[in-house]
Image (cartoon, rainbow, N blue to C red; front, side, top):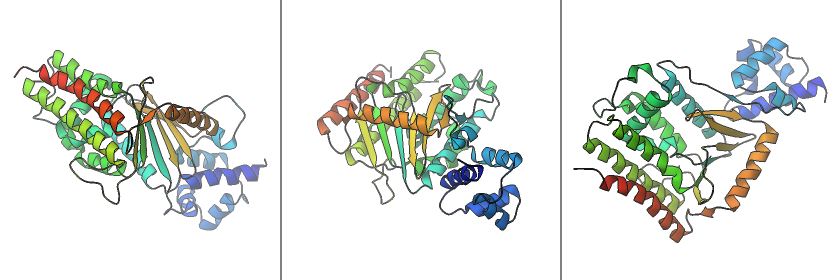
Length: 334
């Protein structure tokens, strides 16, 4: 493949990452500070881009040259962020999740596959108290936020309200993205253990607040069951609308998920691998994604679909999830 062909392929990949309403020519013109005519000539491969321009474009669109040039190496290139260990670490993570959802949403073709190990973070956002508990846990025990070092969780200062606007945007976008989730009954255990651990450590002020957290978690489980029954995603306490995205749920009794997210978009596939509990690194490497999708579809073949069909299996599965929470509720001293 000649240099001009590689350059055309490079720009075609960038075009695939843009939302439909954005012009590649305008984007390149603004980014490289050149005229539209100069941008056209680069996109068509008539004028070569230099190393500085490649660097600007690659950094701006978060793409890998190894991936674009299809170098025959065993390397698999990922992109992502790490904990900065600053007071803004959680806010930065939260905004990054929103940006990924916004990128998914503008694609004509989109589908998210979620291999559930822990309750997906979006479902916590329906309740300020439950969302705030999860935020507090992540900030204190995972991100090691120094300002929370000696703090207890409190209903009097809920972290949710600081992030309410972003949370609302996030859940609205999530409900418009077609999603397939693969569950195991262990999927509820992580949140239960986190609540139990903080209660044992004396970080939850009262049994009343402990009870509210478990009751809200129970309501989340009930809502997911309703979405599975109807095969649609929609806000808690409401009914599906024209914007509701398809929701498919599988149960696999043998394989526990690892919170991997695989996205199938207009002209690209992305795999997000979970690390450091709440962070993700993503790869658009074609060979890697081909292997991930092959494994995903094999896993689906060995799983039981419980959305829209399989009523008996669906009821059995959600009763197991509810039982785990109800045992914790029954143990609370009034």
